[in-house]
Length: 183
Ligand SMILES: CC(C)(COP(=O)(O)OP(=O)(O)OC[C@H]1O[C@@H](n2cnc3c(N)ncnc32)[C@H](O)[C@@H]1OP(=O)(O)O)[C@@H](O)C(=O)NCCC(=O)NCCS
Image (cartoon, rainbow, N blue to C red; front, side):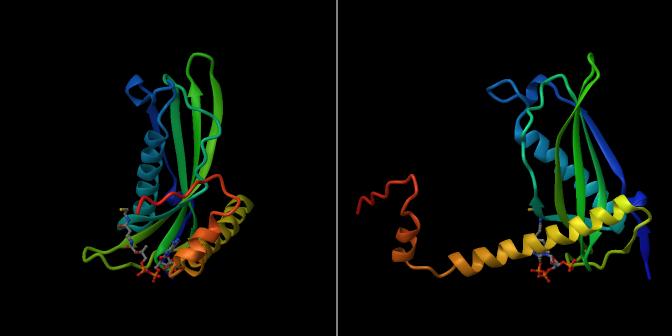
């Protein structure tokens, strides 16, 4: 069986948050961090798969602690779980204030990445070798995240596809919304 260790997938990207990354409130734009997460997920997945990879789904992105301009953001990524053609990449984002040495854990999130060949066909990825309890815990979390991701797609399909206007209007009851069609 073609297999690889978690360690072989590990990668870290570090970037200084410059003033051009700020939003109107002076904090770092969420989109800058999302872009860095996508980059580190791509490197981690393609290093592990030995192939070109694409982003399939993202779970758990939350911006609970703002990142400030002048901080050094590090994104640590590893493959936590593998299916047949997809991998779940766990990303831990930390932000360091260089002068004070204060380190914040800003968030952890999970990117599902698929491996593709040169024709764009899905490619089988190596099996994952787990060598400690942390890796086993993350594998189990990854399995649950994948289930959640697929269930979410099924739920939206089952509940929203093909519903009529009456059912849509019923969904607005009790919500903070006013429906006023002009014609
Ligand atoms: C995502 C994609 C690969 C699914 O293709 P598909 O033909 O519907 O494939 P399948 O249903 O057979 O699933 C293939 C794999 O994707 C996984 N998958 C599909 N939808 C998923 C979702 N919403 N969340 C997580 N995983 C998902 C399946 O579990 C399966 O994984 P496995 O091979 O590891 O078991 C395909 O839609 C695609 O290539 N999308 C474009 C991705 C892209 O280009 N991203 C760049 C950003 S623009």
